[in-house]
Every structure is written in structure tokens, then in C-alpha cells.
Image 1 (tube, rainbow over the protein chains, first blue to last red):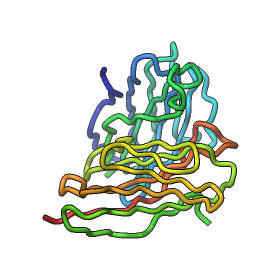
Image 2: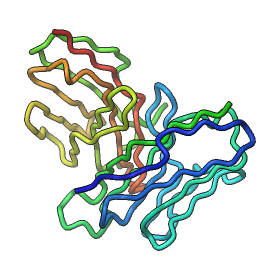
Image 3: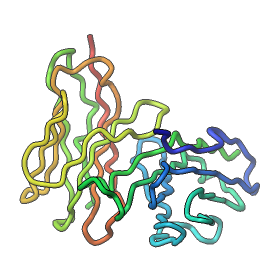
Image 4: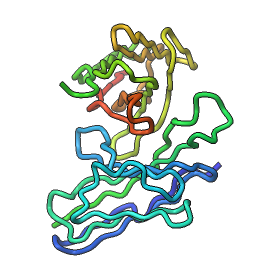
Amino acid sequence: EAGVVQSPRYKIIEKKQPVAFWCNPISGHNTLYWYLQNLGQGPELLIRYENEEAVDDSQLPKDRFSAERLKGVDSTLKIQPAELGDSAVYLCASSAGQGASKRGSYNEQFFGPGTRLTVL
Amino acid sequence: QKEVEQNSGPLSVPEGAIASLNCTYSDRVSQSFFWYRQYSGKSPELIMSIYSNGDKEDGRFTAQLNKASQYVSLLIRDSQPSDSATYLCAVDRGSTLGRLYFGRGTQLTVWP
């Protein structure tokens, strides 16, 4: 079974430039998450989708960050304009959600490889 | 107080020993608890989930949960150098199902 796919793996941009990250979740997973991880810290949630609906975006800096999950499968996270402090690893994760058939597994989250963003 | 706190580490154990990783959480209504392993430069990998008080064993890994004490731990038996990584504790608070709160992680080194 294929895992969560993310691209690009690495991105270097200059400040004030836009950048976009793409994520394809595990097949059949209804819930998709975008996390940000700084060095030496645990991941922090940016946004959570249940199918197409963003159900938790309270931590997303909406002045510069946006996300979409058209058709409830792939998702894109965008930053415009990027700032120096946005340098971090951006992780996408997915989980089966409420429709999971295996007891207790509905909220097990599986991470993609991440995108390491460097803003110069 | 942070949502999830882990013993600061780094933790260093010899090969074959038991490594004990600890985590406390602040929200009493938390329902789901996870341990992730993260190798340097890689993304977190789920290794254990636990939902009920007591122990859950999977191979060399045992997760222990005590909701009354708001404490969850991970024991790694017969530690191997390949277990050297950062271990992240994550908690799914009952009030915000789906959002995981992560600790900062404990760095484990297993030396041969």
C-alpha cells in the first residue's frame, strides 16, 4: 500500500516569493492534515480536512497561508509571500477518519516524507 | 503548562538494555495516545497507539497508559542501535478529536 506522497521534497526560495506544497494521502483516507515542524520541536497542526471541508484551521496564519483540498483527495498548501520565519519542514498526514473499519484506527495518522522549505 | 511534555533527554542506553521514554499530558479528557519514531532528516513514523489504561505490547515495544496520572510511556526492550532516533509522544485531546498535540521528543541513542 502506497503511503502519503508529498512534493517537492526540498524548496529554496527568496523571501516574499510564493511557494506551494502538494500532498496525496493514503488511498481511502478521508482526513488530511498539514503540519509544520521546526527543528527540535514536535509537529504543529496547521489545518485539518475531513473530505473537502476544512474542519480545523485555527492555527493557519490566514494572512499568508492558504490551503485547498479539491475533490477530497489531493491537497495543496500555499504561502504567499514567504517570510524568513517560514523556514521549516511541512508535513502532510492522513488518517482513515470516522469511516475506518478497524476499531481504534480511525485517528492513527500517517505522515508523508515532508517538504523542507528554506527561505533566504 | 505545555499540552504534552516528554523527559528531556537525550537518553543513552547500551545495546540490549531497556529504554524507557516518558510523557505526561495536561488534558484529562484525552482519549488517544501515540508514539512516533523520527530518524534524523525523516518524517515521524507511527510505532504504537494506545487507548485504554494498562499495557500494550508489540514486539520489542510496550506502551503503558495511566489516565489517572495522565502519563504514558514507551518501553523498548533489547534496544538496538537501529532504535537510535527521536521519539515523539502525541495526544489526541477529547475536545478536539483529530488534532494531535506533540511533545518535543526524546532523543534516544543506543550504543553498541
